Length: 52
Image (tube, rainbow, N blue to C red; front, side, top):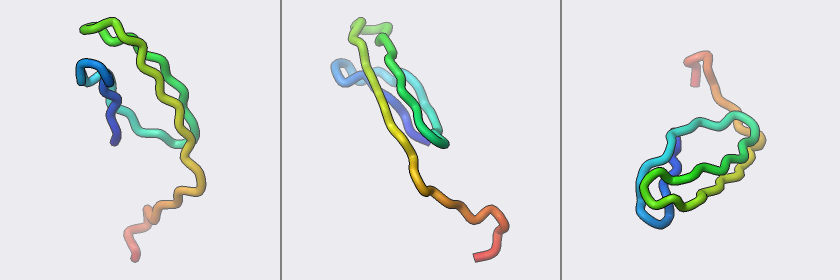
C-alpha cells in the first residue's frame, strides 16, 4: 500500500493500492495546496497459489 502526502506540509492525504492506472488531484485541507498523482502499473504478476 502506498500513500500520498502533501509536498508542502507533509500531511497524509490518502493511502491507496493501484491495479491498473490512476490519476488523482487532491486539495490539502491543511495548506490548500493542490496535489496531483498519475501512475500506471504494468506487467505485475503475483503468485496467489502459495506455491513458490
